[in-house]
Picture 1 (cartoon, rainbow, N blue to C red):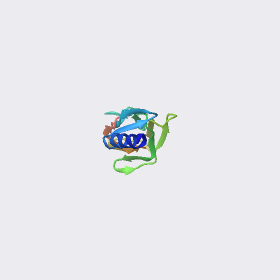
Picture 2 (cartoon, rainbow, N blue to C red):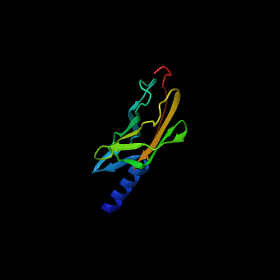
Picture 3 (cartoon, helix red, strand yellow):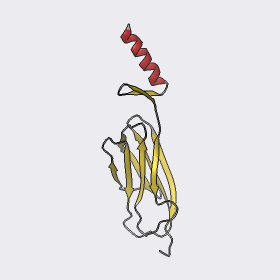
Picture 4 (cartoon, rainbow, N blue to C red):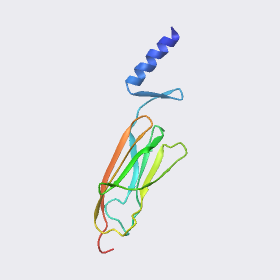
Length: 128
C-alpha cells in the first residue's frame, strides 16, 4: 500500500510540473540567457558572437539540441559547458570581416525538455 501511495504522489507531482531530484521536490524552471554578445553594435569586424544558456534548476542542457543561425543560415559553432552541463556557452566567430546588420538565433533544450530560443540583432558599422 505504501508503494502505491508513493506512486500516486510521484505521478501527481510529475503531471503538475514538479520534478523530483535527489529527493528534493522543485518546480520545473525554464532555461535562461545569462549573457550574450554583441549586443547592439560590435566594436570589431570579427566579433565573438555568443550566448550563455543556464538552467537555474541544475538540469543538464542537451548539447545535441543546440542550433545557431547567422542571418537565417546554420553555422558551425563551438560549445563549452560547466562540469554538470547546466551552463553552456554557444559561440561563433565569423571567418570574414563583417560590416552590416546581422540576425542571430540560438535555440536548444535541457534533458527535461525545457526549451529556449534567443534572438537578437547587432550591427557592425562600416567605418570600423
